[in-house]
Image 1 (cartoon, rainbow, N blue to C red):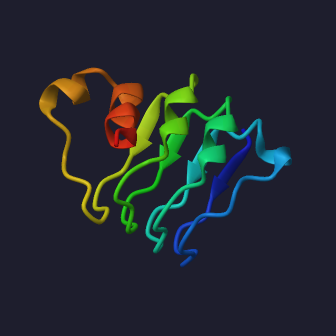
Image 2 (cartoon, rainbow, N blue to C red; image 1 turned 45 degrees about the horizontal axis):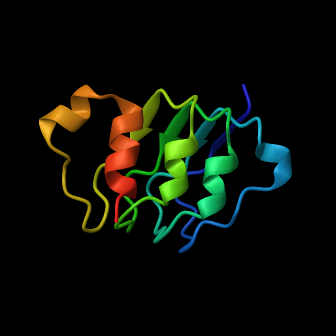
Length: 103
């Protein structure tokens, strides 16, 4: 399974993914100091799992709503990202991603 599992990168904005990662299925960049994710993250059409917990994010880029294969997401313990309402959790990972991508 194509995956990136890089905890503790200590990078502020996460750089855009290279074209070679478009078949990526798991992206784990938890426990870093990432302040933002690139809009190009929505191009990772095969991405199933997105783990961006324990960073300094305040929102997700709108393009996360294009992640059609997303089945798991972890955004816990980020800067200024309150827990979504219970009904959002009931909608699953795509609903959670959309909630955090709102303006």
